[in-house]
Every structure is written in C-alpha cells, then in structure tokens.
Length: 211
Ligand code: GRF
Image (tube, rainbow, N blue to C red; front, top):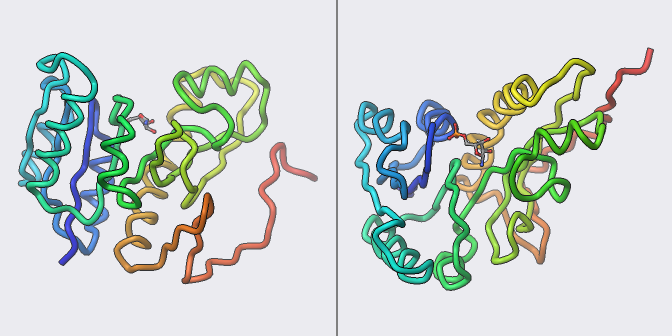
C-alpha cells in the first residue's frame, strides 16, 4: 500500500478532508512545524501518528528543512501532501522528494501566488477565483497544475465569505488529486500534468452567468 505524509501548520481542514476521503493509502504521519497547530489534535484523534519539527529550534532554513526531510523519510512516503503548510521549502528539500510533493493554493494559479489571495482577488475585481492543487517545484506556487476549481466572486463578498466558498472546493479537489496520484493516473511532462483517465469536460465556467 502506498504511503502519505501530510504537512500542516495550522487549522488542518484540508488535512481532515483528505483523511475523511479515505484514500487507498496509509496516512503514515501528520507533521507540523507549529506545535500549536489545531490540526495535530484532529490527526491524533483520527489515530494518525503526529510529529512536530519546530522551525524555531533551527538556526536557518537549510537545517530545518534537513531535519524535516529526515523525519519525513523515516515514514517512507510515496507522496507528501502540503495542507496549509506555511513554510517556504528549500530547493534541496524539494529535489529530495521531486515529483512527490503536492500543495494546495487558494487561487487560480498562476494568478495570485503568495499570501492574501482572497483579498487580492477582491481588490482586482476578478469574477472567478478558486483554488489549485499542483506539484511543488523550487519556483514558489509555480509547479505543474493537477486540478483547479473556480468559484464566482460575488458583489457582497468580503475575504471571509470568499475564503469559505473557496475552501469548500479545496476539500473536494485535494482528495481527487490524491486519488489520481495513488491510481498512477498523473504524469508530469514539463510544466504540465497529463491525466491518463482523461476527464474531458469541455463546457465553460462563466461568472456572472449569462441569461
Ligand atoms: C488553505 O486555504 C490552503 O489553501 C492554504 O492555507 C489554508 C490552510 O487551511 N495553503 P487548512 O489548515 O487546511 O484549514
């Protein structure tokens, strides 16, 4: 059976959604850089092994990433799932697990990489916003895209309402991306991900709706 390690820094709702989706894999561990991450308790209650590698105990990014990578390696994962993991990873770390790290980002990449994506989407007046699951490469928020979900940005939206609408989709698409990975249906070709199952949806997503 394939093995997954999930990395979190906080609330852990994406991690919880992945656990609840019951992927055909062993969730070997949930690891956090933040000892106060709420998600650690959720993982523990679900019977998953948890670990903390606190970045504040390391003098620099390289030594933290090495310690984190060694902790992860002990669990022999086939896939590392970043679920609200709020640390930028070194190239050395990413190369060590190349093609085996996925991240979820709360925007339709390549729009709005980085932080505060919902506020920036509202400020820019975009009509569609959303979320992206992608493989992690050294270029921040630029790795090959596996799946995206779009939601409308409504006139009365504030950051919180928009974030909640996006988060609901995050929980759906992350589980799907992981299923495809575990079933061996994803191939990375350059900066593109090819899906062998061929999920061909040819319709359009338009917001506001046409009448
Ligand atoms: C999510 O919006 C995720 O896309 C972003 O950070 C947030 C984490 O939320 N990277 P949670 O910890 O999964 O609830």
